[in-house]
Length: 328
Length: 266
Image 1 (cartoon, rainbow over the protein chains, first blue to last red):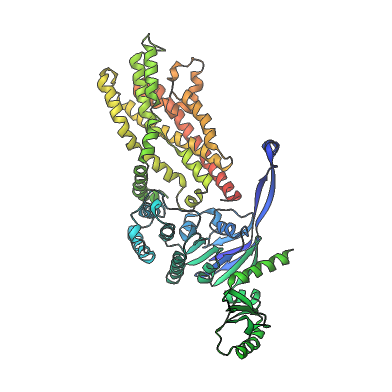
Image 2 (image 1 turned 90 degrees about the vertical axis):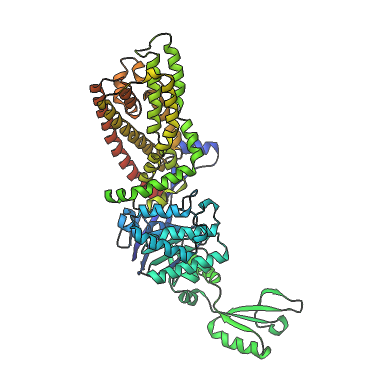
């Protein structure tokens, strides 16, 4: 469904010295600097996959997404999405994809969301019966009925994002591009959005590609993670594979006192009570988990112990760090 | 594409109308800002009280500017501001992801506003005719037909010129300010402030060849009977030539501009 070959994007950014003199000089003689946003990405995504693009700010995730939707033209390399070259913006391609931007909205601000739905029916040339059926399905799935007739400006951020998703899916696209879809939303709405996207993917087989800073988004939605940093693809695989590669072991969490666990290398995990009891954690290589557990249980036979993968944030920090070192 | 547009029109018009109703206060202020011909009407008719000016007597000036008011309302567009904002804020990206040219929706927004403008126009023109029944002139069917064509083309010319200026936003930050310079020239050379026959004879052929007349003055002169029919037909030909040139220019600049928008980061 998506095929990227040596995809590269270089922006030419104007440069100017500070101050009035700098402004005058730049007026007559503009200087430009090349900024490599995406630096030769190869990627294949099959139909129905859910892929999460992760990376720090300015890593090139959003630029990649914009190239995949045809908004940004690649400097070199090629992209094929739903059988088309995105930058040609062929009508059939535009009917096959959708882009939801957490920071930009397509809803008409002073009108109820239903007017945007009507507008999209016209723009995508949808027949009345299919459109009505889809609207009905989306209104039920996203629970929109109580605020559909209110002007968009009067809706909460969460209500607006749910309407955005509905507007973006009315033409039943085969590929969903979601750029930071949960940004600024409260925890409950974030969960609802994730549940909905997952369900839509399972029901309709639509391919989902999302970018996010929020690890929970990615953990909840994507089966496959693509890490982009400084425009380069650093990792492509499952969450388990990411843990195996950058996780550096398992995280053992014990509830107990500092005294009982002394000498075992545990660090406090949250506040401690006055007697020194609380949660303690230590990340160890997988082969050291069992000996550590035996030692802990010998000292605290009734202790509450959990063993889990380290948090995704921690894994990613390590992954980005490794990427930077590799590049340096 | 044409079939798509035909099917889409009712819904597009419905949404545009809902938008205009939502922004009705803004729209009324905008309409009031285009009532300048009433001021010019008072000014020039006062001048002509002393005696005719370049063939226009007092009633001639009143008729000219009353029709100017009507044509201005029928051919007013605000694309340069709307599109400029879309490009600067990046909202254009949303429209570029739809399988219909972004200018189509803007065009419909502006056509749908015309009936609302008529709500303001009808009482003004009605009152004027009630006070001055001598202003009425019954145009011939040929004049009416030519007026309709010239007005429609004038609307298109205004729309395309603004599209051209707005498209400059792909390169410069404030293309609407540049449009201000054009608007000053347009006000003077289109017949908006002064009937073009008041210009010196040596300048008139130049004015007839420029696009400004076809954007306002020509339909006014046709309906007011200020222009012989044969000459009017030639001028509609000039209008059509500008229409073709502008269509080509907008298509080209738009394509290059969208590529640039894509190159510099949408």
